[in-house]
Amino acid sequence: MKLKITLLLIGFFAFSNIKSQTYSTGTVSLFSNGGTDLTYSAKIDVTSTLVTVTLIGPSTSWLGLAFNATGMSDAGRDVILFDGTNFTDRNFTGSFTAPATDATQNWTVTSNTVVSGVRTVIGTRALNTGDANDYVFNFPPNSPLNIAYARRLGSLTVGYHGADSCGTTAVSFNTVLGVNDVNASESKKTVLYPNPAKETVSIKNVDKIKSIDIYESAGRKVRSVKPEGESINVRDLKPGIYYLEITLKDGNLSYEKLIKE
Image (cartoon, rainbow, N blue to C red; front, side, top):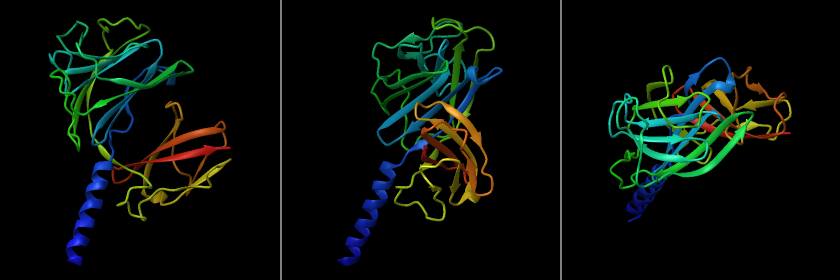
């Protein structure tokens, strides 16, 4: 009986850990023309119940993203598009035409901020909405996932985007390792100290890290850094709350919160 109870507990915690796990593409660069004010990127996060998409780009341009698509001619593919006001659910009807708006809108905007002309908008919906026009995200998500994307430079009016303003890529999902992950190995955790910090931050297990991206609390990427020995320099950051997206050498992601004094 004791063995049976132990096995049940192990199964429960393993199941709970899987259900609480997050899979993320990390921040994927889409377009970059000459400066950070013209940088476009997207991020897709999937949990057992929700998919969350973060779109970043100039506040003067609309940005669209299609799931399971290799081009604008993939009729019927699920599209999301943000025009500065609305995060709309759409689908492709063919090349050189604006994606048609779905009868039912299933995305909810949870954050919409503009900092120095760069907009960060975050939307979320259920993995399976039951709508035939919506792509169904599995859990764990299918990886790689083909996505298509488009923009319209300097315009929030939805229409044909013009040449050199669209593209496709394949994104892969990795598990996000957090300090509260019950199965996270102490030998792989990345811990910041001191935190809060003024000038430098040391990182535990820095040898496991491939790269670090620093984001403001509003979601705007501040910069990418490489550890200097076992620490990173943060003295030029303004006081506030930041989030570090840490890409590990094994391909996993870890997120840490940093308070800059």
